[in-house]
Image (cartoon, rainbow, N blue to C red; front, side, top):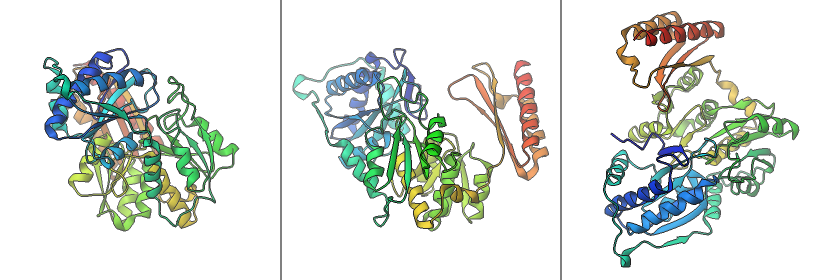
Length: 444
């Protein structure tokens, strides 16, 4: 079992293990040792705009060099841009220094393989195994060398633009872009401007400490106000590393990942190989809408890694999460906020419909999520009483609702989710179930 790598790499608070410079150096060395066995070629290192990125970048570079691996430094780059460049430059791996939507005092490491997909579990396990060994520096004549790829942003900008139909011009659209003071600050505005859009930019002044602070996909209040103030057609809020997004319609209402997934699926109906992948948390309204398209709807575990596993194992194209991770394998090898936004804009132009109109075909069902505190070692699957409680709520909902109990992967919590058609009933049942689950856990 992997101890350090989670569903999205390694993540934590800066200065606390494992997000320390000494660990980063050892991680670079361990990764270099494993990757050197896989083949030749450099390793790319990119980062978001966190102040700690400088420290961790230098430490990773030292470790990789000590293992005899060459390094290519990209500077601040969105996660999907690093995935693209890893494949485009035939690098043997790409490393992203980022904690995505977390605050600036967190950071982390994500890995991409030569094909632009996230590193396999087996390779992550091998890297963890190397971390347990004494660090040994390769002989000095074989140390890795580092250089910077200065045109990395331009390469990725051109890639994003190439994902849009060549006949499409965004000149009729006014677009507000929120870069979350993150890794897309110097890229996303150029992509949309060069495709002709009238662009208003917010959240694009990173200072190393303001990433995701009041801006971005997890904080849409500012972009909602900006869309209304500027009478814009659409707002695009990216997260700190640019792999997910939330949209805002012309009235200032948010459009989440489920609705974005519906819009893209509906526009690419004939190229989806018969199914769309969501997660256990995807809204029931999305499932019903996808089924109405005569497509299957597959629920993966929560996490874009698991969505990707389903897509690749079942040879599918499109999947995503409510949080705004949208994966379209006909366009990119990982979730990409900029490209997902372009696909929605393309649909708006081709259909002559507003974002508000495009989302009306999916009716979201009321969904209530309540966190219940538990002990770190509690296992709800081994408490028969909880299983009975869930079945009772499911019987009350019938075929028009869902119940999900999901332990948090990072906190001592159980997430209690109830979903259905009747909002009052859903609220009552969710609160009832949360209280009963809490009582059952305390009784253990």
